[in-house]
Length: 248
Length: 248
DNA sequence: ATGGCGATTATGTATATACATATTGGAGCG
DNA sequence: CGCTCCAATATGTATATACATAATCGCCAT
Image (cartoon, rainbow over all chains, first blue to last red; front, top):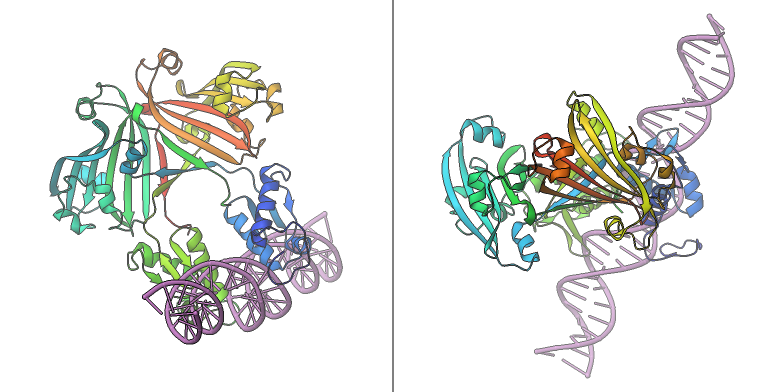
């Protein structure tokens, strides 16, 4: 193989041994060769099979366990888990990047900027318990001449002090916040909605036309940072999520 | 601390040392104390700081690197990465579970079942290159008396032979497939759409009403398995995605 | 039969050590 | 001045070993 004289094992590529063990087993599981409930060979058996130390085998199996493909039980061994509830990884790009990927010129335009003491609704949206200053922003993302998305945002000024000095006239609050505020958690809600008159007017579509609403709340170290609604006309936007069980 | 006589290090809980190192560093990064670009202490420094072996430190740092929080460069050290493009983990439950979580009785009803040689459209939806038998299914998921979601599904019979013997009269194809076919990859597309007459009729809503469309393609070991469209009336459904950067 | 208890077993975590590999910084030379 | 090459350094991967811990099996006494 490669490092630290091993015998032969044949077919050595340049990937590490524990990666090879990992993908071998993963393949067996995903191909169905080892059905859910099947007992995976014990560490000492794999040790013999791959002619390596238990630590190496252990590392691979631990990773598979963390990826949720197998379950490990002391004294009993490791077992292929039942198919997990499906989950998908959703990439949420910067809107600028998205627009530019379409080959269209991107532009952001502020519609409204309001600094105020948080209303009850603001606090509920942000998840704040106590009142405090917030910044309410509304803006439009353009793809060429057409409105691409409407953004309605609340920023918790207690958590992001610097924001009150920024006009956000042509720079979108999203990219401004990222890089300035390290965020530790986010929650997204995605649903369909009909455009009301205000939205229809801003996005230049018919009232009642279907829109995709992506709502996001962000926390940094337990403190609410921002709440934002992105409203896309149905035609302009598809969220794509990809998923592969383990982490290759 | 705990295992294998270490000295004191104080404040020992019951978590493992490498977990503690991992969460310490994670905290520093997420709190902003270590900004993007900041060089993390070398392995040998952390070794001294935590009074442990390099392997233990290495394990923690490797995990942080895999989680994308830091970047490791040989000879140079490890650095806090720029804030990544945001990603969310989307849980896609079984519809039955979702309905029952609402406290409503669940029921599935098949509308149509058609076995046929794949049309060009079928192949394009499934991602098939060669023609072959497919099963086209349409069904309704009910929450109580109200339609909750419309399902339009294609199953690649070359990949899931057993499906041609199943009527799918009252059992939804989703739960049937899961547990029978180990899936290795899935792709989701989420968008808003207006209900056409057929959909409006099935879901008992007004034509033109906004709906959430979740489209999923699934592969098992490179072979296309199924393509499915779930169509939810806007009021009945919100997708929720949560995200925390590293993997705790 | 049955209930408890200890031996056995497989995994969990940590150590010290060894060598590989990529990269950087500087010494030496044309 | 610039190029090559080498040594130093930090990470990457693997080994052998040690002891902890949880779960199970089977023995033994009741």
